[in-house]
Length: 161
Image (cartoon, rainbow, N blue to C red; front, top):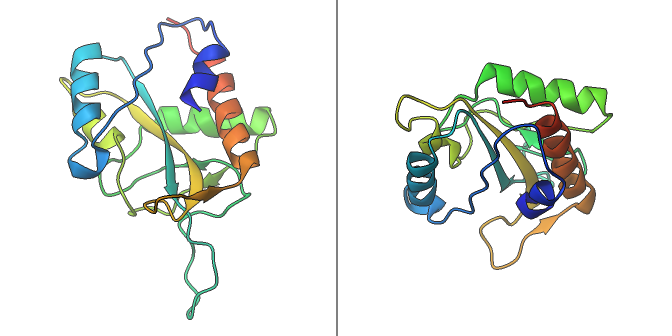
């Protein structure tokens, strides 16, 4: 998704793209990248938990396949920047891009390290819901993937220096 977003440029802002490693063992790659790049703000793109299958008791799923990209309000590692989150929602509405909110308090992302870097970095997260996220293979809805990329492309088109 990040490659697709970068290739859709150029944008009217300075854009750095980083593929990070070791998120599951301490957000190490994101911490190093954010410290080195010194971003003014950050959008984290990722795959996230999708647990929309049948359950014994009625529990709201974290995300649902086919409901669009998931925008994070808060998880165990970060409270997303309100202005960036509002911008994502506004952009989705203006461009008729379906979206959903990830259930709060679940999981963590590279934004958890990025937003604490140096003096702090306003951060937001856009995720593609994926079943079996930590298995050797996961399943996603290609429409969610394309909508997530479109949401980021349209959002970045609105950014200026």
